[in-house]
Amino acid sequence: VPKKKKKRKEEDKEKKWVSGVRKWSVFAVYFLKCIEMKEKEKKKRKEKSVSMGKHGRNATASAVYSSYERKKDAEGEGYGTLRTRLGTDSMRDVDHCCLSLQPARDPVVTPDGYLYDKEAILEYILHQKKENMRKLKQYETQRLKYEKDQARLEAAAQEKKADEFVRQESSVSVGVASHFKEREKDTGHASKLLMQDKEKVLTAEGKKHTPLPSFWVPGLTPESKPARVKKPENVVRCPMSGKVLKIKDLIPAKFTPVDASDPNLRHKEERWMCPVSRTVLRKGMDCAVLKPTGRVVTMDSVSMVIRGDMRDPISGESLKDSDIIPLAKSGTGFAGSGVELKAEKAGPAMTVG
Image (tube, rainbow, N blue to C red):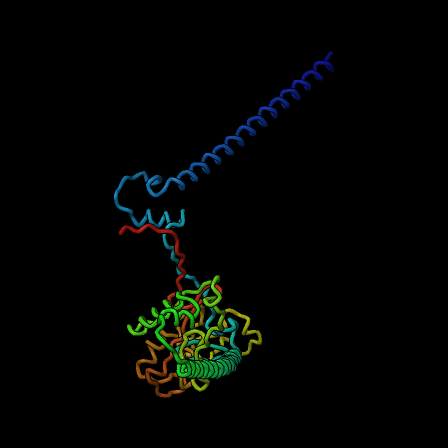
């Protein structure tokens, strides 16, 4: 009997444990379903608020379209022009070439402050000169052909006038005849006579009659003529500023290394510094090149140290205002370029006239 009672107690405990586990599992499933339903309701509410427009979310009936509402609509619905300023991640490093977007091994600077690798800019200048020679040759060929065609057309027109004069002089009319019939007999149709008379009237008034092209009339079928090539300019322009660029205008730039003994200096982020203030040169910093020596310094050093006595603090050479060339900051070729470093995306907008 004691063994049976003990066995019953164990079975009762096991049943209570199983029922408790079942209750907790049901409660856990119910709790998870409640969380899922709340997430769905929140998502629906958010989608509904976005689709309701500028006044649905703010619950306001103001007649003024506030800047907050404009900003919210631009971000949520793509309304209006979106503007953002590019960060330093979209900007090239101080020593990167504007053409190759890689660290310049032999950096040179243009008078406008754009930095290039010497090999890349010389290759670009050589390519542009060859392209200008090719365009000039194409222009000369087309010009000679055009002059020959014009001379041939003038000769044909003179010959036609001479034949017409000979034909009129050799023809002898006997008796009185209808002038209209003679003209119709010569040209073939009365409509051509009307066109000729119209052209004469327009010529006398100083106007030019240009018949519209037509694919059905053989005489008015449009022709496919090659486009005339304009005379190319025999100069090379800077790929960034668009101004005339010459090899003699390139100024060698010298960067001061942070650690000159490091062989892997070019692959590090902090590799150059200002020789005056010993500040590490980073992305987005305002820098300048001193033309006589080619040293790259920060604009803070220029304003606080160099402009005081207008001398190079390292070599002691005298400087002019034109000898201080600010380096142009620009984005990469994938983000944009220019001084403002702003990106814009035009969207639909409503204007009230």
